[in-house]
Length: 414
Image (cartoon, rainbow, N blue to C red):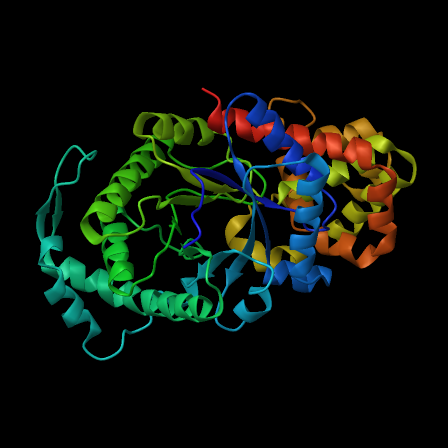
């Protein structure tokens, strides 16, 4: 089994032009004595929107690694795959995010629930877990209820895992259950991990849904104290499950952040330093926004195209928002008009978009709309990518600074 490193960062590069700038942030952190390993990810949905192929992610990542002489690890994630999409990623990925959210709540087969409950009497009663102050009280009925909800998803994860295993000797498996309505509680996570162990799924990261809102491209919305308790309890549950069920020793939480959850980053960092646990954090979408910021700052044709993309996004706001309704909160009344934006300087556009919340010109509604508007840039084809090449220095500077200053420092630097 390929072993995933302790600290990993899931980085998205929708147009396959920023891998070197992203890796440069990892280089800067390594110079400070902290190794964070990049995992380049791009979902099947994003490939279909942009018209790219999975191999392009590997190729751009490998080129960046070679250009910077990066001698540490790196990975390519087949992001949010299922049985229908996994095969096209087998040759070019070594990390597989197995997404089984659609199977949550489906009725398990036969007597699967009864068999699971009989096999795991240790889950019923007063369950003491090191790191959680009070024992967790779990009834048999609760175990049955959770099993009914999740055993089909676990079975689907196992089916996909075994399919990958039949095709590849070495790979990293993540199980993702975050794209669902309700967060998983720590006791639910424990039951899910027991079920995954029963199925022989050697997962190295698990992505539960946490409490609160993880909207695209903006900060966490929710009770920070509740998140802190939940995150720390989940770390304790994972350590307990590793010891109890023989799961991989490096099994860790994966936080599918929707990017830029700045207020929870210090909580995560403190928990990691306290426990010695690892983490995988996905912060994919903001690279595309840093490209727009760089093009706006470059002025000329770059600024003109940035304004055009916003105008088209505003014109098609309902269509763009529909697929992301559960992960965006856009107040249309707070979106500037296209005419207003057309009068902006490059700095004004960049300030409205760049995620510096204390800046008086920052507009989170403007940012969220552009976050989900990358399809409009894809439709521009070579016009967009040629501008990225022509302005590679200013764009790359924004990409590196965003990842290093606003993400890595908050997460990994005490």
